[in-house]
Length: 333
Image (cartoon, rainbow, N blue to C red):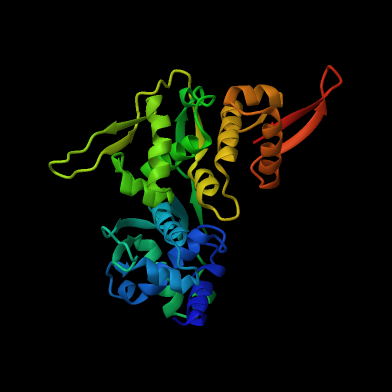
């Protein structure tokens, strides 16, 4: 595909109108690729059809499972998040950029056809932006922004098991919560989970036992007679009377999937626990030995992991002199 034509389209659509979010955002580039591939269908008022392999080629990405997961996550992202557009006559429109989509089943080679329906106002904006070169000169461009991403709520009871949960179990729990939120599917089979999380089946079986042990995940047996596989579900009966900790979807996606910001199992465990201690935002002053005792790690390990979290931009780690004249650490989320 001609990348020059795509770049021209990209600049016409977004650069002058500052729509949705930062133009360097991967999610926005994915949405733009979908709009570019479906530009003729947009003119006809039809749904846009495409496959993930075409998106990957258009964006110049490597052919990997991780790439396809990122593209798929971007589609979910624009389905569940709202954008706000300032219209003429001092009016605003709040809507989903992607109103609906249909996903193919068993898309092993990522070449099966997806279809999406985009917001009508966004459709009109796209039509005018590339069919009329003088559009941005003669009309005031839309000023749009992404608003109020949905958050994922983790019951505080979950964190009381951290001393006995492995880092892999914590990561898998957050991955399943993310998958559940994005797909709106609460009944997940092993094939769904391993595809979304890129975890091997042996690793899945090993880690899931830890979550089932504490009734954090419930397994509903399948049937050999009908060859139906077991279903795994988040236990919704965890007590909320101790409150919950809120995590932004983008934060969880970054720590699990973002190439530059993804965290190891151990880093996810301590970062999420610090979020719990701070209520999701703020600062906490606890000794490394105490944090280690609470999550089942050595003090030296806590020191090393929090240094890495500081370097990756997840926390700010500062030192101060305590009342005992000893150097202490403060962690700011």
